[in-house]
Length: 98
Image 1 (cartoon, rainbow, N blue to C red):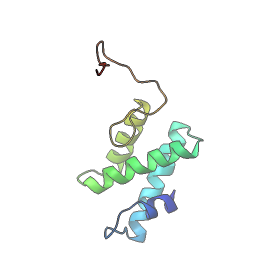
Image 2: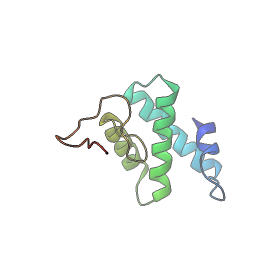
Image 3: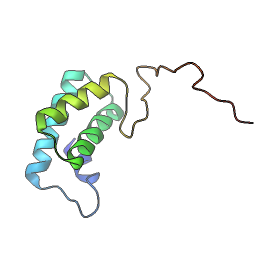
Image 4: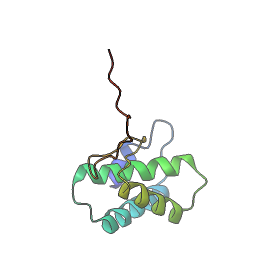
């Protein structure tokens, strides 16, 4: 996950080696706790951790807890729903455009 984090850390906001170590460890812990095996899902977890870290104001434990909670709820980074679990749609949520 370290390579993913390094590549996606953004222009001009390069992470230090210590920050990369921390985020890599968080990603591995979350992936292990969630039992994730698919690379796309692993990248989703890493992206969420990177986003939460970039926002600031959270401890590593909070970042881990929020990442795991949102992943279990099926919310992908950026607020979209991931494929699993299937999204729950409110009645009338789908509108037909004419």
